[in-house]
Length: 176
Image 1 (cartoon, rainbow, N blue to C red):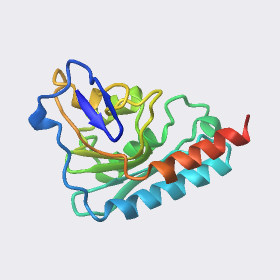
Image 2: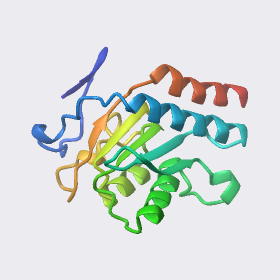
Image 3: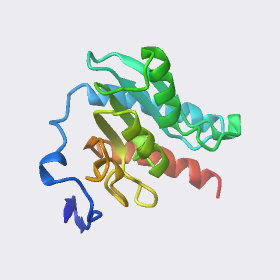
C-alpha cells in the first residue's frame, strides 16, 4: 500500500522493493526547473496542444532537453512533452543513455512516456501534478518502479498540483 495525502491506494503488486521506491530529498532547484516546464506547457496550450511541458537536467544541473506536447502540430501520436524532451537530450548528449539525468514534467507521465523514461535510464522523475486517469509513475500504474524491469526510476511528486493541474483544468474547461 502507498499513501498520498488524504488517500491510500494499492500500487501494482510488481512495484519495486521498498528500498528502491523512496525518492530523493527534494532538490531546491526542482521548483525553478518545474517553473520552466510550466512555461513550456502554457506556450503549448496557446498553440492548441494539451499543456504539458518537460525539461531534462543533467547531473551538473544544466537543462539539456526541453519539450512540450506537439501531437497536433506534428500529427505524431508519440509527440508527448516527455518524448520530445528525451529526444532533445539524447541529441544533446549523443547518447540514448540519460543515466545521470532528471526529467521534470508538469503532469505525471503516461504508460508510453514511462516506458521511454525507463528505456533511457533516467535517474529521477519530478512531477508537477498527478494524473489520476492515465499516470504511470505511481498514481494509476507504477511502471517506472516495476521490479521486473531492468531499471528503476526515483519519483518525486507532486510538487505543484495547483499550478500544473490548474493549467490543464483551464485548458479543458475552455474547450467544453
